[in-house]
Amino acid sequence: MGMFFNLQLNSLEDLLLVELNDLYSAEQQLCDALPEMMEAATSPLLKAAFKSHLQETQRQKSRLEQIFVDLGKPAKNITCQAMKGLIAEGSEIISAEGSDEVRDAALIGAAQRVEHYEIAGYGTARTFANQLGYDNVVRLLQMTLEEEAQTDKKLTQLAEENVNVHASQKFGSSS
Ligand SMILES: [Fe+2]
Image 1 (spheres, rainbow, N blue to C red):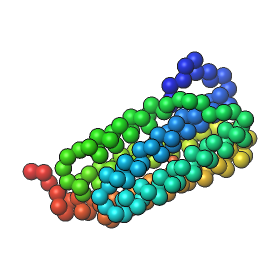
Image 2 (image 1 turned 90 degrees about the horizontal axis):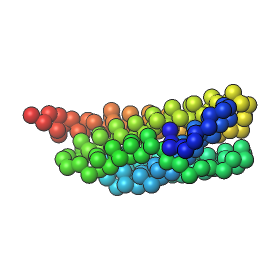
Image 3 (image 1 turned 45 degrees about the vertical axis):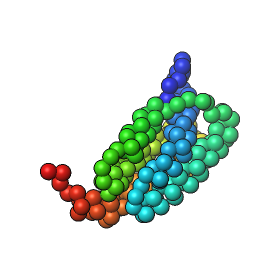
Image 4 (image 1 turned 120 degrees about the horizontal axis):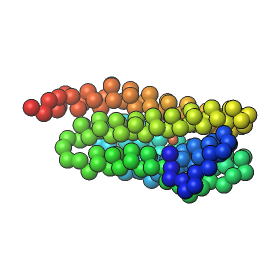
């Protein structure tokens, strides 16, 4: 949730807008952070996954802009504090010393935390929009929700089949 001054929650519509602004800030922050994560990844498969998710994230951000237009409510300039924290944790991994393989495994963990935050936010916003009968908004939010779930799945697969395997083969134990 972002930092709103005088947060007004008098209606479900107010709450939907709070959720949408939170997600918009989250996507914006992620667009700025993903190039660094891509740079930091060693596995070519992980680099490629971050690259394609960056392009997807840019589209998701535009989709939210479309929603604000549909609703006739301009986006607010707020900061999603949760995403800020998740990205800060990702930065700690990027600047960590140690093995490339283990850092890749850690980057996947950080990226999946981001996806889960977004999945929770989009699911909640979609449900509110549905309640309010905003069918087009529901459709757009559902699209993004499915993409985020797909990304999460892809990252799990990449970890299980590739990155974690390399990390454990070379550095299974630190003792
Ligand atoms: Fe996203």
